[in-house]
Image (cartoon, rainbow, N blue to C red):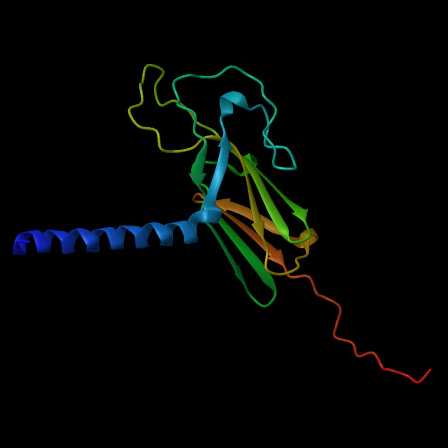
Length: 178
């Protein structure tokens, strides 16, 4: 094998290794961020409480190819007294969100990302943004007090503050002779 062929083989091997490493990292970091969207054309309301497909209603607007999946990045971090959940959701309004605890440890964010045509006579060459209704379930690392939770939406970021719930204090149980 010639020196040039050896160099090409080595370069291709490095490129392949780098590519596979990148895909593995993307898969491990973003697998939870992959979110299912139902087309607004097929949807009259957000997804139902058990995460199933929304009720079907309305006529489809065929200019937009159906968007099925998108990434919605989420950060969950904690302070001593609260958990904070941040969800990147650009292009929405505060009334587009519904937030609930679907179980004691799972926060569910349901929403609708609406689209508006820029011009009635426009034609799209590329559509990478997902539109429609979605449901994102986030497993929380600690018990929270839902009654005192707060949510704000600003600059494309939904921020949910969840005070930690105080668990029963550590109590020692004395063993007695029967």
